[in-house]
Image 1 (cartoon, rainbow, N blue to C red):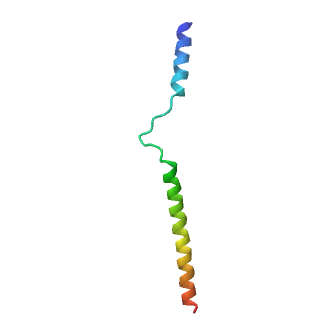
Image 2 (tube, rainbow, N blue to C red):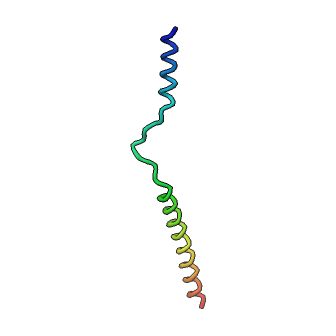
Image 3 (cartoon, one colour):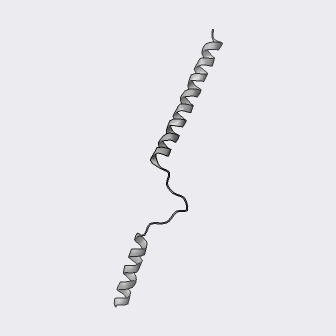
Length: 58
């Protein structure tokens, strides 16, 4: 009977362990930097298109 309890406890403890990934999670600063870079790129493209349209309609 105790064998079954020990096996169940070992399975529960084994299930609670975190999975080890070969890559680490990027720092929050890196994620924020990427978001700002993408936003800057989108805003730059919109402003460039608006500038080209204003130059063409003169």
